[in-house]
Image 1 (tube, rainbow, N blue to C red):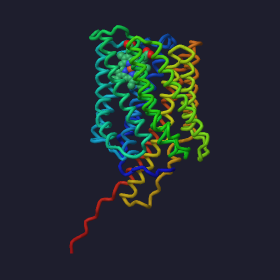
Image 2: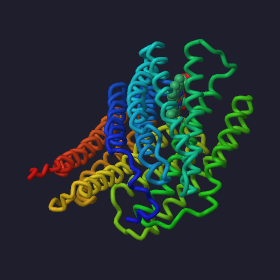
Image 3: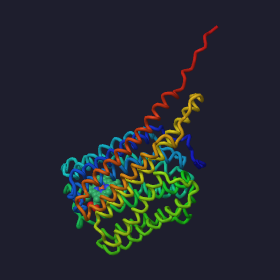
Image 4: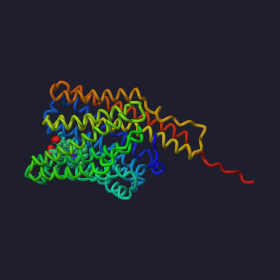
Length: 431
Ligand code: HEM
């Protein structure tokens, strides 16, 4: 693996990112169970309470957690920019997002206004506690300009998404009135899915694909201009929507979607030209996620039901890609931290497990198969409603398997860390 340019010595303690990674699958399991429970009614329209609940279980509980955990880990290592007070920030963000995602989803799913504002408040506070120190770290960051630009713009997009989310809550609660509701929701979705999730995926891809798979670097103009162009595009589209110019908004957001299709095609072409030929489960997830992204853009252009676009983006890209990345990130962190402990304890008589042996590739492939089945059943259920419950079950099963695999890696770390505890210094008897 090409780890040149990384400041691995700056990595935060492993339990900080690990806690985000280990709780995130619980929210995808909950979304799957909710779909299995409610069945096809959940997918009747984008405004169904169950759909809004499942959306935020995935958007905040699953995706938000994994993205925040990964950023706290990535920033010091990739950009030499440790997040100030990382232990406190990690603990508070994790707690608030966990409570917030559960509360907001429950509230939007029919639990009532009190749960909505408690959940929204906790989520917003969780993201705030995260974004401020991360913004400080990003201002101090150096190196990897393409990645940094994408991460900076993604952090800004997250702040706008949360602000718009709070505004929607205020409207739902009757504290605020807006002339037209849908343009505000569309803007919230565009900032959340294209800005925050999309640009974070871009930043991670630029950094991680060449490192793990020795793929060619992304073209320089894409690294330099893509993220700012997306940000300007979303800003222009949401302004047009809110000003009542639906057509201009649609045209601009179409341009942004086309840009993401270009990014997906460049990614797939880089992956196929990689120097490490093995097709591991992480790469399968990259393929599926990039194809989902292209299909979502096509579905949108051909005015398919918005629920199809949502399913392709939230499940195809949003659930699949982070799962694939975790198959690489957690074993890498485990191996790296154990090696670090070995150096400081001097226990060179013990063997550190090889990174590739920490997670069963066979089971990871099965996890990918279940994920793919869930995605296809979900997309199919929009035309054949009886497929909705099996889709929910497949989503829950794939996420349970993801959780079990991650717990397995965490347990290996625990066992290794106990063995590699530094020996107590011996006190020499005084003569
Ligand atoms: C503090 C954080 C957030 C709050 C308070 C919040 C709040 C809301 C509310 C109240 C709605 C329902 C709108 C309505 O029916 O009137 C909504 C919809 C939605 N939100 Fe969020 N949200 C937050 C974060 C996010 C994030 C991070 C994402 C994506 C990454 C996201 C994606 C969506 C989507 C896809 C919808 C569904 C829109 C539709 O019906 O098509 N939200 N949000």
